[in-house]
Length: 173
Image (cartoon, rainbow, N blue to C red; front, side, top):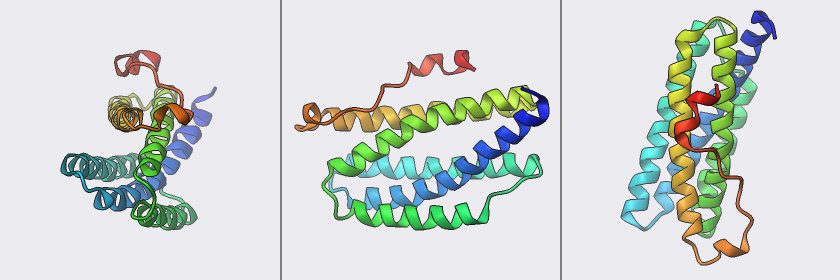
């Protein structure tokens, strides 16, 4: 892959991530507010804060690449995130926990891909930050996986694929 193609791929992933973090922030806001267990509320609230921080970081990367978010994706992310946040308040406990874990699992790979593209297009200065975000997403996935696996119905629902160990993230890029 050429440098220009890697740059375009990096921008595309970061644009998706930027809007995705917005949707996640809104969804987690509703999610933690729906929880009755204090420890769960605190952890999901912390995850919400981390998603907003990722959005800030990704926005800075996009600006540094002379790119920005896609307005239609931003609008869609707002609608989806707020709708999910509302659904968390009415859905059974397991549904948002499962959905969050499954989504966080995907985010790990997306940030790994972004780090590869950053390196390929000569933006090695972005790699450490991107991989740190992948590691944080790994922690989010592990939290939600643990909550889902601890539920009485865990054996009855198909689990998403377990991501490789957190310590291997940097070695895969």
